[in-house]
Length: 125
Figure 1 (cartoon, rainbow, N blue to C red):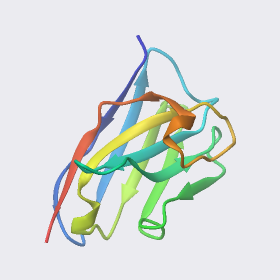
Figure 2: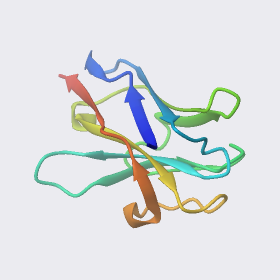
Figure 3: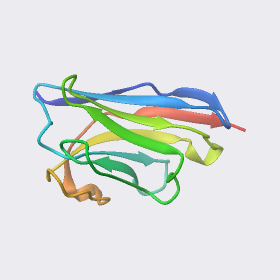
Figure 4: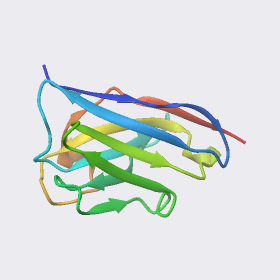
């Protein structure tokens, strides 16, 4: 069974940092772009960041550009989201997802066919 397992969430004060990790099990996704999304109850899932299969290109949602960095280590089969200068409005459940594309960076959730269970990030003011 293929699973994406996120880790690294938690509680942090505004201005602090966290690093999320996403480690697939059951298969590798080195040939696929990977993305991070986040969701707050009652709101739509929001695109955060995406990285190509070989990690050479990335894209970001407007609200996190300049603060978050997505990266991947295909040797470790792991995708990371480094989050700096966190704000209370970054509070959400963060999901890792595997894209149906290798090199296309999509911010649309329907372009991702594997999803993790999510990890909670809470930023206190």
